Structures are given as C-alpha cells and as structure tokens.
Amino acid sequence: MARALYAVIGDPIVEVDTPALIIDLDALEHNIQQMADYAARAGVALRPHAKAHKCAEIALRQISHGAVGVCAQKVSEAEALVDAGVRNVLISNEIVAPRKLERLAALARRATISTCVDDESIVPRFDAAAANAGVTLDILVEVDVGGARCGQAPGEPAARLARRVASSSHLRFAGLQGYQGRAQHLRSETERRQAIEIGVAAIRTTIEALRRDGISCDTVTGSGTGTYPLESLSGVYTEVQPGSYVLMDADYGRNAPRPDFQNSLFVYTQVMSATGRGHSVVDAGLKAMSFDEGMPLVADYPGIAYTRVSDEHGTLDGEIPLGTKLRLIPGHCDPTVNLYDWCVAVRNDRVEALWPIVARGAIL
Image 1 (cartoon, rainbow, N blue to C red):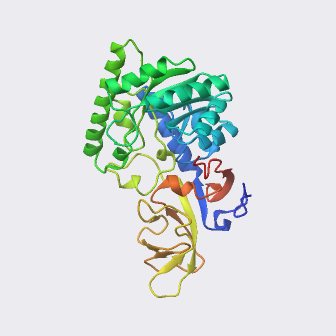
Image 2: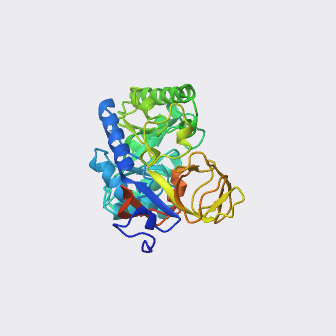
C-alpha cells in the first residue's frame, strides 16, 4: 500500500494535500459511543458493518466499545480485517466460487468466521471446504425479508435450508439473517416502519417453522443505519448490523428524522480555479468520491452548492477564493471510502493519525 504522502501527523489540516479522505475524530468517537450505548440499552448485540469504512482501526475501536465483531461483504474484506487484528467477522453475503470457499474455510482457522447461504445446492460445497480445512463453519440462513435481492423465501423453504445446514458434518446452523437494504433510505419513518414490519413477519414465520422441526435459532441478525431501532425493538432480532452510522453521508442526512449521528467523513478539496465568473472549481470529482446518491454537500459553505462534476473537477455555484481548502460531505460514504488508500484522522483541525483503508478494493 502506498505511503500517505499528502499528510503529516501533527500538521494543521490546511497543510493536508487534496483530495484527501478526512475523518473527524471527535465526531467518529461520538458516533461509536452513541451506537454502543443504544445497543446496550436495547439489549441487542452490535455487529457494525465494516463495508462502510473498510478500516481496521475503526473496526477495532467499535469492538473495544462493545461490538461482538464486525460484518464484511467479501472474503477479501474479511481477510484484510483479520490480517489487521479483527478476530470476529460475519461475511453477511453469499459465497459460491470454490476458491472463495477454500479461502473462507482457511480464514476460520485464524478467527471466528461466519457467513450466509440462501441456496441448498451450495451447502455440500461449504461442508467439503470446511472438512478440508479442519474447521466447523457457522452458517446463517439468509431470508428474503422484502428486499427481493438475496435470501431464501421465509417459512418452510428457509427452514428446510436450515435443516440441510444443521445435518452437515462440518457446518453449524448459527441463525438467520434478514437485511432489508432498500428500507434504509426510505425517507419517512412510516415507510421504513412498514417495510421492516414485513421483514419481521417473515422472520417470525421462519422461526416458527424451525421450532416445529425442533431447531433452535439463537441469532437473528440484520438491519442498518436507517432502521436499526425498528429491528432491535421487534422482539425478533438479537443483533444489529448498522454500518454508515460511524461516518454518515449526505444521503442518510435526507432521512426523516435524520439519524442521530454526526458527519465524521469528509472529502477535503481545494479551489483550483476561480476566474470571477460566478463559480469556483475544486479538485475533487468523480475519481475522489461516489456520486451514485447525488452531489456532495459543501460543509464549510452551506449556501454554496456543488452543481457539476467531471473526472477531476467539481463546479461550485459560488465564488470562493483560489487556493481555499474546504470539506465536502459525500452522497454515499461506502464507495467513497473505497477510492482511498488512507484516511487522515483529524482533531481540532490538526492531523492526529493516518489510518490505512486495509480493505480498499477488496471485491473478491
């Protein structure tokens, strides 16, 4: 991984070269503590999703504040986190390729690893990979809770899959996963509540089918930053998986009510052109942040909007002096983080630490 040439520990933030990924440590620590306190009050386990930050330093801080472990989406993400000292990872996704199954099983010799299935045909391959590695893998059955993405149909189909897992020699049925990704960004609380009620009903139906077979279900995991209070108070979910809360972004800021977390993630940029024609141009464009959830917000100039983007340029609809450095709040934190090798951790406008994004580009 390349050295972080654009920042020096101890320097004021204005000396950081741009574009740079900035983490406000006070806001980050507030968010970590806020979620940890909530999970403790609600009586649910907290397993934050590391796909949001891909950073072992943040994952370890979350665990030191009570998280039971973290989630990852890819085997390579889990490998990078384990290499950096994280010892409990749920790969909350389906894995199919033989080499990935081998890598997953091998990783389970080094850390507590679990993952999900939604298809009976993959179970023998998981079992064989675990047997070859000499491990027993914890497997959760993923249930489609309304997102129409991954997940087995609720009730008897999901229970049948759980029976197949439980009957395997090197697999352990570890519970259910039910995540409704689309519900996270439904703007009103009423819409989100209605979506999660459908999901909770699907999980209850599946648990009842499992009970009829005498199969206990100790863990039900899922949820995200937009819905975690709904799952945690459902009486069904035992574990929540919010990820973006630790960073936040412009899109989550549009939810009503806004999640009770602070923006800790910023893209630091500099005005590179200011010709006095009513606009300014900054050096953070498509290659510096994600635009799938819209334009970033200009944190330091709330009356000015980021209106146009190209590969290396961003146009602002106001005049800001040449050379000015400012913070942008990206529309979507997860894919923005994935563009950087390092994040610059700042407190009181001074660089306190440089953290590697260890799982950057980990898509295998």
